[in-house]
Amino acid sequence: MSFSSKTAGSPLVSTAWLADNINSVIPVDGSWHMPAANRDPYQEYLARRIKNARFFGIDEIKDKTIDLPHMLPSPEDFAKAVGDLGISVNDHVVAYDSVGIFSSPRIYWTFKVFGHEKVSVLDGGLPKWIEENREIESGPVSITPKEYHTPTLNHKLVRNYQDIIKNIEQGPNASSFEQVIDARPEKRFTGEDHEPRAGLSSGHMPYSTSIPFYAVIDPSTKNTLLDNDSLRKLFESKKVDLEKPIVLSCGSGITASTLYFALEKVGARQIAVYDGSWTEYASNAKSPIVKNENQ
Image 1: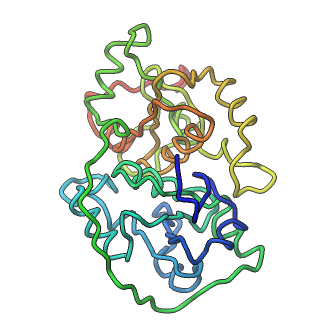
Image 2: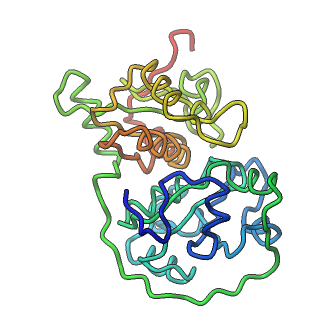
């Protein structure tokens, strides 16, 4: 990834880097929480945010024509929403969230899907920013809209239900097989725990691998990403080949993006997110579902 010299950085930026570059980038709060958390990320944004931050509503900027939680919006809707946030195609966006690294990679992936290359994730997010007593704003927000030219969706970064079924049908011995990694907690993967969405079976797709999203988070900080060596060892321990195609899935496409980001960081290049993820997959009665033998 290349950035201008004015905002030289990388896909993962530190709180110190953001503080030094705060006037030349646009922080974007992409906080999102499971419904059971009973948290309103937009109200939290109004109460406490990084200087000049905009709020990207994952549950608002989405495809509203289908009955799935937060599928990618159309290129036209993305351009309108992002332009209304005062962001242009030339702006460097730094995504963060109120957990640390949880939903911010979804913002990163979304911008990447629509061809916006100058986008980063804040390591440690809002919690680390606050811990370090850095500048916080609150109250109503006034934003001057910008024109954001309608982008082209990069289909290489996205997989749909038909892609997943075709991949399962051809099996792991096929030359075009894509490794599927599931970011949900392990007991939902095995079928031991229920899904949080009513009516959905737990379990997993045939040939998929379980790497819960929180496995890529540094346990000593609980809000920053593991270093590259630790990430590589994690993926190696799960027999993931970084040189071959990888598809990320989770409950609804949020934490799959966390694994997408971690994999990109350690050099994987053939990576995509299954946007509908388990919510779409398990909603189809024809989908093959694997559970532990004891379930």
